[in-house]
Image (cartoon, rainbow, N blue to C red; front, side, top):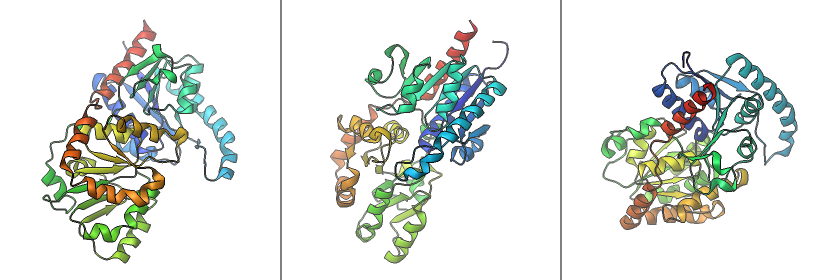
Length: 372
């Protein structure tokens, strides 16, 4: 091709969508360094900061997701959707992409719908084991659909599906840090068992409540913890810790920037069951206790968790039972070396380390097919 290829990557809302999108972009640039890339996200969401931090341009749409807790907030959604559709059309007209990639999240709907309607080839990356409504609707015009789980033919046309896995942050793949050095970065002891607690970039209410109501148990244990509260719960967590007194075996932060070290130091992980996080656990062979969020579309996190649990590759605790069971199960599991090794060995079988590169090649192939 005489000129650089032009690719729009759309989606976001959470780190689970943003980090795979950036990984795909990086892989495209590795294969075609002169490729022109533009991200389209949702105004006010974290992609508007994370994507520029990664060195890419991003434009925001005035789109919002459906609020299941406060229905009154949904009154403005049709207007925002209409405005987003118009803006998506303007973006496409000005940027003139050869292909549009959707990674999930609010913004991918208007952008990929518009692209498909005017004949621009589209590629969807479905991260979950249970496809979301947006991707099921977009699949009609999509040329390729990249998935991470088997049996996705029940959601998408089989001839469009490619098994690629979910892309993860490249720095996780290439890390050389030792467990000892990793734990020292969190001012923790390398000789002690360490549990990493994650609730996503925004936080997980139930998981955080489990920790806050068990601070005395944590303090008395011979285990140490790295706790990411998420930005919405950090202040509440710090107040609870202040009331509980000094807890030297608990490192608390609202957001872990150095996830490479956090994973390297962890013997066991507690997490929601987002597809992106699960892909990281698989790649790094991390034993994990999953507490799926009940507040997601089609309860897809439970489906993600069960895909592992049914293969003895993870432990699973229902959100409604977490307050009672999570900490006791965690402290019991961390000392069970046989179970930890079994979980590690089994989850490793789900790892797909070359996902971003495979997807990038499909994107470039779509462009070349159009030209031919």
